[in-house]
Structures are given as C-alpha cells and as structure tokens.
Length: 291
Length: 294
Image (tube, rainbow over all chains, first blue to last red):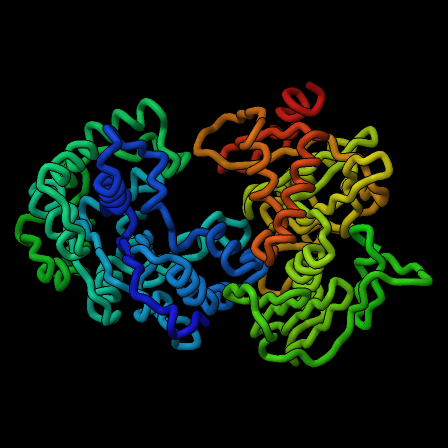
C-alpha cells in the first residue's frame, strides 16, 4: 500500500464506452498541454497515453507477469498499481479507461477514490456507437448492438490467447454510464460526443474548467483546430495510427453524428431505444428523433 | 542446474536436472516469511526490496523471499499447488535472485543454431515464446524461455546460459503449431501450457550474436530495422528481466556497464509482426531470409 503521506488525488480517468471519443479527447488534451507544437503527432501523445488496461503497465508496476495470473488476482492488484502510479507522480496523470466502474472480489474499488481527482466520462448515443463499433471491430450491426445490450460485455476476454490488454468488464451501454455516474461516488464530468462535434469550443472549455486547466481561448481554439477530424484523418492517411485495429480500414472514420439513420434497421433502433431509454433521457438525447 | 547456477532445494523442482554437486550456489527452503521486510529501499504493488533482501507477496499462492543472492525462502499458502509455487519461484523470484547476484538477464527466449545464440526480447504478449517454438520447428535448439541469462565467457564474450527445458505456450499457439493439447497447464485455471523440450533443448551455454526485439503492429506485413547507438542501449536496458527489482545506484551502474559491454558483441534488430492473426511460420521465414541468414 502507498503510505498515507504519499496519497494524493492526482489521477483523472478519461472513461468511456469504446468508440465514444476517448482518443479524440486525449489528442485534444495532448495538443493543449503542448501548445508549442505546431501540429499533433497522433502516434505520440505520451502525456495522456496511459491505458488502465495495459498489460505492459501492469507488469512493470506489479513486477510480475500478468499472464501468470487469473482475472480475479489481476483485479485484486490493479488498485495498488494505480496507487503506485499516483504516488510516483506529482502532476495530474490522465489515464484512459474503458472498464465500467466496479469493485473487485475483495470489495476494493478498482479505480480508488482516494487517488482520483476526477473522471471525464465521454458518452455517445448508442445508435451511432453501434455503427462505429461494427466498423471498428469488423462485426455486423446486430452483433455490435448486442454488445451494447450485454451486461457481461467485456474486452480482451479470449481465454485461449494472450491479449496485450487485461480483461475489462464494460457491461451494457446504460450500465457503463450508471457505474461511473451513479455508483462510483467520484467527481464525474459527463461529456457528450455529439456536443464535442457540434459545440466544440463550449464543450471542451467546460471539460477544461472541470479539470482546472486554465488556458487562453486562442489555445483552446487552436487545439480544437489541430484535432479536427479532417486533420486527424489526413494524419492517419500519412503515417497510420497505432491504435487502429488491424481489421479496421481507418480509425478516424466519420466524425459525424446521427448518421446511423441510413444504416440501422428499425428493429435494432427500437431495441436500443427500449433498453436504454432511461439513460438516453438523462443525457437529454431527443428520443423521438431516434425513430 | 539452470542459468549457470547450482541449486539445493527442499521443494521438488522436476524442471531442474538432478545432479550431485559438492557445493551449491543457491539454497531453496520452505519456511515462514515475515509480512514485511525491514529497511525497505523500494516497493511495488507486490514486492518489497531492501539491500540484499527481497519479498514477493502473492495472496493466493504464497510469499517468496530472496536473501543475499544465495537463499530463497518459500512460504506457501495452504491451497497453493506445487506447480503454482514453482511458477512464481522460477520467474519473478528468480529475477530478484539474479539481480542480487549481479547477473545480467533479459526478458526473452533464446534459441541456438551453429553454436550461436539469438535472444528474442519483447514485452508480454509480443510472441517471444511462440517465435521460439516456430524456430525450434525450423531446426533451431532452444536455450531458454522467458528469462535469458547472460554471463561472461572466458574470452570476454557473453554467453546465454541454458534455462528451463520447456516453453510456456497459450492454447492458440499449441493449435497453430499442431502440438499436443494435453500438456500440463501452468495453473489449472489458465489456458497456458507447459510444452517440455526434449531433443530441441540445448543444455550448453552459447555465444550470443543477435538480439531480436519483437513488437506488434496494426499492419499485415512484417518489417524490421537495425537498432544502433543510444536506441540499442535503451532497448537492452528496457528489456532487462525485472529491471524494477534493481535497487541501488551501484547495482544500476554495474548493470549499465554490462549492457554497454554486451552492445559491442551483438547486432540488434527490431522486428514488427502483425498483431493478428498468428503467422508464426511466416515470421520464421521472414527472419531466416532477412535477418538470420542475411
């Protein structure tokens, strides 16, 4: 355990369901924290590139091969790994996370509250998300929608092979939201992907205000410009993007919202609406427009 | 004898060949370990380090203490199986022992052909053991899996010491290689298997000539680059086995000196493979053509 004197609340979890703008937000943050760089290097965003589920990170801090451990043993150790990251850094550390907020088998918080400065939770409407997940993972639309409705949806779960990430329980789209917002007792700032696209300055500024990052308007606007989808797509075209799955043609694909209407059939849309109505309303998505 | 060291053990370790020695380098005992060690210099999520003392604590398996580079004390949990105890004894605990003895070790598997060793380093899941299995199927012998211990030889060159005579492979690799899927598992709940090495095991130290650092890339092709200069030094340093267990300035300096000496002797390549699917045979062909016989 980290000693009491060394405990500080300096970790910001950049949490999201997969394909909800997490990478985009971290690229923006990286650009903002390095304003001297004229353009962003999408494959080198070290300041904000820590990944909570990284096997390499876990192994290096725990001093043991995670590949020799069961999932319950890994989850028992993960909180201590994050405590050590916190204690060894004086600055704010931004960590990407797709897991739902949860406790391990011992009842400990996987993402300890006593080292957490805050959570930026990025959310995206489940309809566009279904299409994006389908493209990203090379699966059908119905398979993608099923994942959003599945309480047990997990990443890196294949028990027959060693994945470069630890197993992560994501849960359904609604459960993921509830876990961070209703159950974690953490200071959570919810950011809608659609607002990042449609009202970028206002939305990114609010997030920076939450993170207590004070910069000039010109720097925020410049960082938004440097991370526009057109530029990110161009960068990916030129140099590739290391976070792109091998089966996906492009990581930065659309950069649009509500484009699902041409692609999702009525049945998928209806089931997603029924399953996630409560959270859709809480997030002030216009449910009538989804039909 | 493994890694060039002679062990006397109260725990049965079938992986280590039984030979009668007059002297041993390391004694392995079963005993009681404290909850913590004193005068801690460094600590991680599961370990504590002080000068010549190391404690690894695994709640489900037991605690492992390494003292003065010559004694290992295992305090097993009641439900831990012998194979589970050996798993953590022969990996992280061994890493701590090697650092206490100032022995250079890399996180990687080593193979041999024509009396020359090649060490394959890489992070967990990069495919080191799988590639070693592929090279063994192509006529190479295997010196070591996961930990490659390097010691000075008579003519001031580094040799790879033989390690444990098995490969640890996941189920998908066993299937790909058409290996028996009835091998023992490293732990009952993991689909990671122990494939014993027989004729393909090399039990003699071999001169190290090349290091291959294996990395994955989201590309469907293989590629490689020669690593030189500072990058070469950093690559070796970063793939030192359990580098986090190095605990004081003197040991770190000594370690860096050895790495620098090693650089003069070897060629280092960074090799990128597709993250998936498994393409072990294609990777072996690529390496044979581009690096190993190039």
